[in-house]
Length: 412
Ligand SMILES: CC(C)(COP(=O)(O)OP(=O)(O)OC[C@H]1O[C@@H](n2cnc3c(N)ncnc32)[C@H](O)[C@@H]1OP(=O)(O)O)[C@@H](O)C(=O)NCCC(=O)NCCS
Image 1 (tube, rainbow, N blue to C red):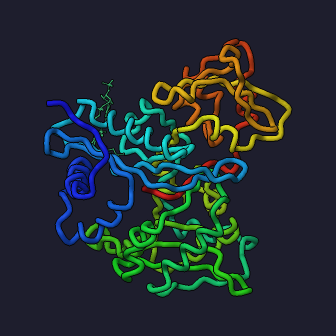
Image 2 (cartoon, helix red, strand yellow):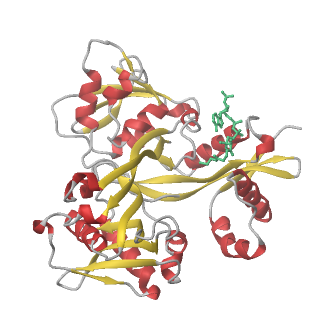
Image 3 (cartoon, protein in one colour):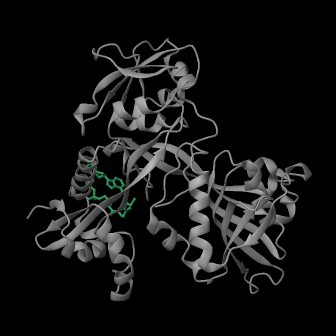
């Protein structure tokens, strides 16, 4: 019997969640956990794959907005809960599910889709390009101090947020800070309770520290956890800290929060799994080698669902060059076309014959936020240059590049 992909009915969501859990190396949720999570499952568009009456795969998305160059916020299908049970893999179930998700985003008129990938080899075939990396880092507190030197001090203060004030505090600061980096997304309401659960319950050494300006306004926060290292391994180990989320309205406040963390007695080192590739902290630590990059990992995979809407919504750098870019998209043929782009914006051309650069939908997704260079994509063979001797990729870089680097900071 073949595998059928279709929207999940409400009474099928638990079976879909079980298939997702099994695919992602977890046990199915027990009754207690399902009670806690089921509203989240009810709230999102959901598609599932079925072998007869057995649910064998799932994919869903929830709607957020992504900040694109120039500051516009574009509706985005944030893909999540993708999995096919091990007994039914490599039979096209995920392909059917991803097609259903893309079609759903087309019908909802969402210009973008975005996801975080378990493996980097899965999603390019569905039109997603890797649009921004992140860093996993460990920072040695003693060698990092003083962070930002004496010039980096703000006149603000740092305080611990009471557990029952965590969600209101962090969500309102996040809303004000949103837009400092291209690639950031609006965070759905469920995010806060889920990601801040330990700080809200005052469990597992989790805290939220907030930075308060002299005029009383809170303008930044850090969500972190601290614990003792293993005395069995090393009796002098001291404490270890993990930073989960650090958001501020300015670089200065961001560094003030790092300064607070680095100054906490007994903590030998801080780890953070999701830092921007051009992290200001790396420039601000006293000893540059105090900041150790443990891994560079792909953060956001972006798909243009509506190429015209996406290319015309972002801004381009004020440089006196122009470029024509041709795009092909086997899953959404309406995206096939050629765009002329210069400092004033992008416009679709009538002709499809004139593109200086030709790419598939995944490659334009990679370049879209301005963090991945056309020149390197061309060098990797992912861009077809009509005239290989031309500087078209370099011109595209002048127009597309964004600074600071794209970074989302929200894992889903
Ligand atoms: C990734 C996953 C969803 C793919 O499901 P699937 O039903 O096996 O995928 P499909 O059969 O539709 O495969 C489509 C193509 O992608 C390839 N592919 C799929 N998953 C792949 C992987 N993990 N590595 C390499 N190639 C992969 C297939 O070989 C196939 O290639 P082909 O078209 O050239 O034949 C499934 O392997 C899975 O559940 N993995 C564990 C959970 C996970 O990682 N989920 C993603 C969370 S972001």
